[in-house]
Structure formats: structure tokens, C-alpha cells
View 1 (tube, helix red, strand yellow):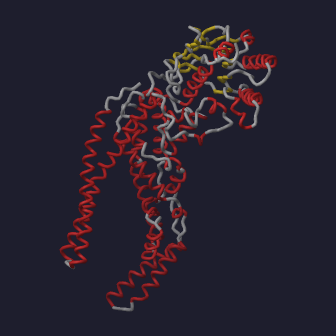
View 2 (cartoon, helix red, strand yellow):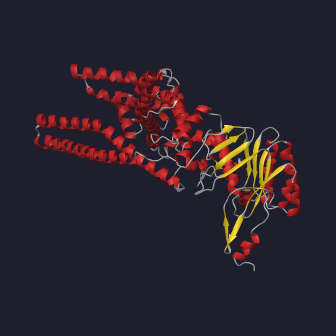
Length: 570
């Protein structure tokens, strides 16, 4: 767990910046009021030269102050976000993260049972706990790594492990925090596609331009030859109608204000990444890709700024009336975009960095974490569940199948979820909540919450059958870790035991890794399995649990004792 050494220093810098920005705010207000006062004097006293000059001077100074002060305001916002990031990490450490806004619920897939079994998405989920991803691509990549991961390589895992000890990550997180809920839902593909292809300029787009040029020439004649000025209205009408009707490129119909906002956020983020120097080879490679495209992002931002200028209906009509703005805009875009602007690599690099920042939280906000290693068997040392406060670590080493027995509430399900989370994070490329973790390459399948399908009109037993059918199909072609909680609990004891033994036999036949928890001690004698158990102890008529896994089958239950303790039976 990282100790925050620079928090006080950040607070001091923020307080200093607040004083500076307060001063700039006062100065800006003074010059703004001066412009208004001088304009009032200009028209009331009719001293055009003096007050006209003073108005212009005050306005210019106002713009200069705005330009000079903007970097201070942006730095102040970044530091405010950084303080919020410190708070979020402290809340993670207390497992108080359920109010974090991004739950990733839209990524839930009901057909992938492990996502619900392990609380991967939704309220109080793994995604909600981990996520530092804020860009559209970053959120999608993080979700996909948790659902259907692709191998991001050893360099990525090394970067995640490196970042878990670096407080400088908070600068990157603070810059990402500017991405609000609306911006992370924008479509990146559309954002890129609008500027990645050549802009066509059709012959009909020349009509507003020719009308505008004709109007300028006509105005010259009006002032030089004193000819009739009223035909100017004809040119204005042609400007407006031809520009609004004939110029209909798809670029002009897009939500440019949102994409301008997105390009502005990306541009500021690249500056923070450029300023954040970290001594990791893969980070340097990502940073170089991102920084190389800063000029392209700047160009894209200017393009969307131009498009955004026509979003105001009144301004759009005025500009098209005066100069056929739509046609001029398309011409400018054609010259600016030329053969298209490519920024795919830099946006992908940013998304990879977001996922690394998310995964690093396993070690950043917990006592320890490790990088998983390949092995022939599963060997987890001191594994803990990152979402469980004061989770008791457990270790396990096995190859093949385990029957897990034990009392109610003793920790069986939490243990299986802990192992599943470790494997899921390993497959995703994350560091792992364990002291050491070794595993073969395994797919993960679970049946831990089959009864949760009751709300859909599906019985517990049929829900279990659906899950077992899926697992049965996959074990023929995949090496898997299969976790089943209280196998076939939705049917009677005699059929449950017989069906369970047949399933275990099939898992063993396909040489799969599996853990099956049960209250049926008859399964402990099944061929080719290992027995483990959890247990309770009693002291002064009170039941206590140590939540530690132990070798061998369980020898007792606590249901009758709990019923007596509750006064239900005597």
C-alpha cells in the first residue's frame, strides 16, 4: 500500500494557486467593468477618441489577462482533482467505494454468469472499485479486459506493478477526472472518423463562395462608383439560401460541441502525460505515441471549434447571410484535414494507460499484490478479496478437483470468489491480490449465484442446469477453472449426490481444475478429488470463525446450533 508523501505539498500549492486565481479574477472583473464604463462614457459624453481608445485598451488588457491567467486556472482545477483522487484512494482503502459514479453496469452480459457471480459490474463491483478509466476507449478496454481479455503482454503487467508504488499516478488520474459522465459515453469511432477521411468539396459548394465574392466586388463599386446599394440584399439572400440548402456535408450535422469538448479534454490530458516522467520502458513508449500526436489533437480541436461556431442558430444564420459560412467552413476543413488526420495509435495508448492505472489500484490501496506467473498447477499464497474489508488471506495449491465442505458462514463462498477474482485479474493483465500466484492458462466458469435467476422465472435447479450445460460444452475444448457453490442445491438429496458425482467424474475425465462446495459429506469420498474445509469454533455459547481453509473434509455443521441460538428450536 502506497504512503502518500506529497499530499500536504499538493494542498500548499493549491492554496497558493487559489490566491493567485483570486487576484486574476479581481483584475479581470476590473477590466471588464472598465470596458463597460468607458463605453457608457463614449456614447453619453461623445468623446469618441478618448473613450474609444480607453475602451479598446481595457478590452485588450482584459483579453491579455484572460490569456495569461488560463494556465493558472487549469492548474488549480487539476490540483483540486488531485485532492479528490487522494480522497478516493483513502475511501478505497476503507472499502467505501459504492458511491463512485462509474459502475460499468452497461457492460454487464447476463449470459456470462461469472460477471454476476463475482460482482464484476454494477453497484459495489470490481469495476467500480478499480476504474480510473474515463475516456470512451479506456472504459471499453477496461470492461473488455474483465470480460473477454486479450493478452496485453508482459510489459503491460510490469507497468502495472511499477505504477502501484508511484504517487505521480495521481497527476494522471486528476487529469482523467476532468472527463465527465457525458464525455465518456461519446462514440470514439465517430469522433475519429469525422477527421480521418478526406473532406469532399462539391461544385455546388462554389455557389455561396461566388456569391460572397460577387458581393464584395459589388460593395467596392458601391463605395467607389456610388452605384445603387440596394442589390446588396439580393447577394445576402443568395449567400444565405445557397449556403444553408446546398452545403449539406455530414460534418456539419454532427454534435460538434460535444466532440470539441472531447478533443479539448484529450489535448489537456496529453499535456499532463507529457509532463509526467516515469522510469518505465513501456510507459515511455506509450507516452511517446501520445505526445507525438499532440499537434494532430490540437488541429482536431481547432476543427471542432470551427464546427462548434455554427451550433448557435442565430450566429449560424448571420454568418451564412454575410459570407456563406458553411461553404467557407467546408473549404477550410478540406485544407486542414487534407488526407485525414490519424490519431488512433495515441488514443489506444491512452486507453492502455487508463487500464494500467485502474489495475494498479490493487497494490496501490492494499497491503500487497503480485504479478501472476505461469505454472502447471494453481498455487495462490495469501490471497485476499479486494472488495472485502479486513479479508482473511488464504492459500491453496492444487491440480484437479477439490470438494470444499464446512459450516454456514464459515467462508467457503468468499474463498471461491477470492480465487476467481485472482484468476480473472491475472487473465486481464492485472496485478493480483496475493503474496504469490501461479496458474496455468485457464478459462473461468462459475455457478455461485444460480438462485439469483428466480426473479426471471427460472427455478434454482434449472438455473444450475443452464450453467452446467455451458460448462459441459466448454470443457471439451478449453482448460478451465470451474467453481460451483453448493452444487445442485435446488433438488433432493439423493438425486443431488448422484448427479454431483457424475459431474465430478466428467470434470476429472477432461482434466479440469474445479472446486465444488457442498454440505453433502457423501461427496468427500468421491474418487480423484482433494478435500478441504472451513470450520467454526464455540466459546461461551458463541460461535466464531477464523475463515481459514484447512485440509481434509469437514466433520460438522452448525445449522442446528444457529437455530437454537436464534430461539427457533430448543
